[in-house]
Image 1 (cartoon, rainbow, N blue to C red):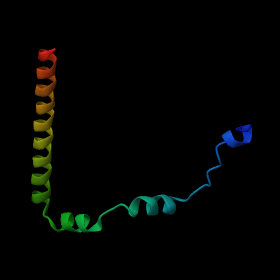
Image 2 (image 1 turned 180 degrees about the vertical axis):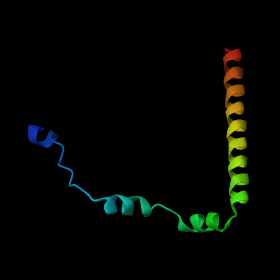
Image 3 (image 1 turned 135 degrees about the vertical axis):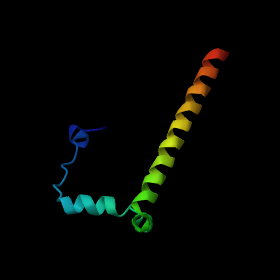
Length: 73
């Protein structure tokens, strides 16, 4: 049998900004950050443009697939 006490959410201990940063930092690949910082501004902008072009291409592919699926039904 579950008592009312078992349903109480435990209090979350307050944490500092450093704790939050440490939590996120453990999942950051610093080698990727260093590699990006070695690039010139022009290289970074070119990479961003390629990323946006890929995003647009993927969006168009999804729209075509959805249109085809709707036409088939």
